[in-house]
Amino acid sequence: MDSSRTTLSPIRHLEGQAASVPVDDLASHLLDAFSVATFVVDAGTRILVQNRSANHLLSRSNWLERRDERLALRHTVPTLATMLKLGSSSGEMRRIAPPAKQGEPELLVRRLSGSGLWLILAHEAVPALPWLQRRFGLTPAETTLASALSNGTPQADVAVQLGVSVNTVKSQAKALYAKVGVSRQSELVWLMASAPECLLDVTEDPAPRGRR
Image 1: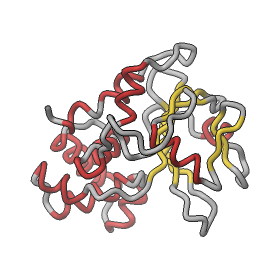
Image 2: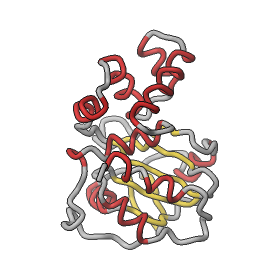
Image 3: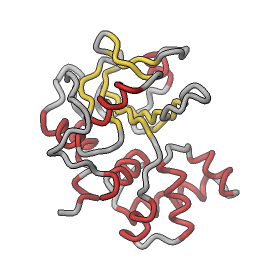
Image 4: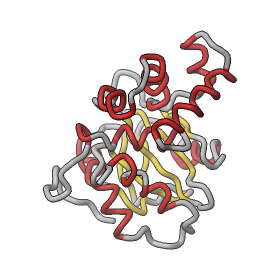
């Protein structure tokens, strides 16, 4: 089975789901395969599901915590719920940086289309670029673009980094997404996380499962 296709299903499975409907076991199981710590929360940051990597992250993080069944940030103003409200456009991925010099992963946040749910990835570097380049035959320029976009970098900032126009980045990103079989930046992040180097054995828990 082609993992680069099947591992995109959690996002598509959750889009359009009402916040009042529990996240089902299928989506939870699919999320568990990812080494990237992943949360699905409602607009009030109530955690509907978190994968096993998220459980492990919460057990060691000095920034992220589960407080009264909600995902919260220590030592950070404004609150996570306020940050979500400030970036409410569906489909757009935003970055929330941790406090400086804490060694914590940044958060990649996206509102799921057609629902009141938010997808939050605690993004850390993953060794997926060589796999992505081999798997899809990416050129060096496409690999550079994929690296920037998979970090959650806005296209305007990517344009500055590469010294090209925003329209050029948009055009190149569209071609890149088509080549690797995704339709948006957040799905590229998932694809990178689904590289064989980054998938967990779902038959073995890296850390005890938390409450769902």
